Length: 251
Image (tube, rainbow, N blue to C red; front, side, top):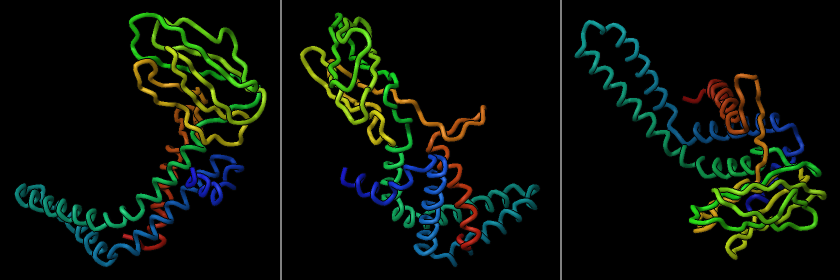
């Protein structure tokens, strides 16, 4: 929680931007960070020599189609060089791993789903463990949340679904009661961002999971291609990484 608050204080201004623009900016920032660390945490002269040698061997292998033994020897040499190249860059990968994972966690929390608006109906789904007989499942909510239909239902299958509406913006606890046990799940209503996970994993002998059915946020939709924040990030990070490596002469 403290880490999320820290990242919010640094990156929170992006949350008021168009999400697509925000992810593009973050892709550029992370790509630049990785490229700079990779450039100065590796022996660029050695990596250049390895890439030049691999390129030379690739050209050589094209002339060895009629000499299988020499071609195999050349390809083995290329594989060895490629392995050496990757191992040499492993140090830089370790340095960037933790900050990238932390940033990914922050982006997952804020860009995965479309926030629920005040007055917008949404569903909560309770997935049950295997039951030998029907059980009563109830949903309890604060006054700011209203439930359509019965709050208590007899469940004979593997799930129970409730439709709710939030009348006031805020973060609230929904309680699911089954077999005398109460399970709390947070829901965010009318917030500009959603930093609450959609699914609570319980996995006891009564309840498997409780999920708030937030709508997935799609940032790029061409009709035949739909990308959420992660796919959009990878698309632009590849573009930025290729460009930055060329500009900064990183091998």
